[in-house]
Image: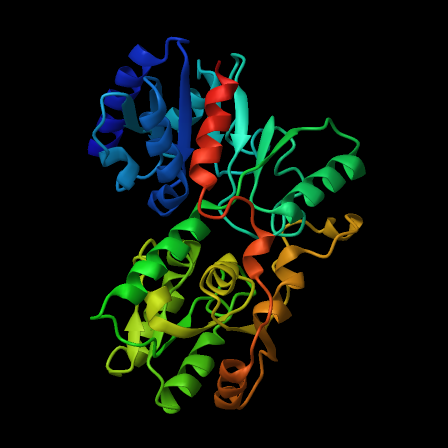
Length: 372
């Protein structure tokens, strides 16, 4: 009841500034997405005197706590109040990482608004997302050339209108590259020794299927320190599996559980990652240049028609470039870890991403041009 009262109060405050004046709206599903928005928000605020509205469905979202005279933040929940706000937005531009606009609860405003999709992962657009995920957007921010190629093929295949595409880059990768440099300069930072276990989520996921326990036990029995870093959606939909894992291993001094997935320190402490189809594995391998062991579970397919698009999905293409692939039934993971650590990659993986180190500035300039 208290949350509902707060949401209604926020709705009244929002309605006062929802007046059609020039502004940019950012919408976040939750706190873990702030890392993708923050650079753009701060860049725009530093450029010129323009109002930004930051809407979030998570009261713990760090974006709601930023204090700036031109930033107006509102917790709008994830129910009827959020849906009403979306239908009645009076603004120039809406930026969001949430796909499937117009497909489910989130609908476009009854007023003219330019909708921008911001990537929150490096994975493919045609296999990792639903068949209609991007159809309703006006501009797609692309992390790399693969996103441009994929969105154009999707449009061609479905015979739909050609959107604007912007060679943006990927802020999360920029942050990792910059933070790793600082970490390596820190004399108190220990040499990376841990193994980071960071699988994706879904019914076939390593954690959800119950296969994680066998793999974790192998790693701990081999005397490696292991950090388990579940996907945010795993916390939401498979918390019983996580409770089971914690119960089995929490007393083992080599086992650590990371619940704050917005933290990046575990990425720097790790010498290697074990994953499956997680976008975090691409960030780890491309940004930090560290190896990944991919457990070969069934592909994470959210679009059963993805094979109609004649492009190998990026997450499939990149697996052997940033690591190695092992069977989900492997009985000697220790050998795989040793082999993966000794393998060398001789090419620059950062060429797969636009505007490395400069994506936030480029993105802010583009958004500001949309409202001029």
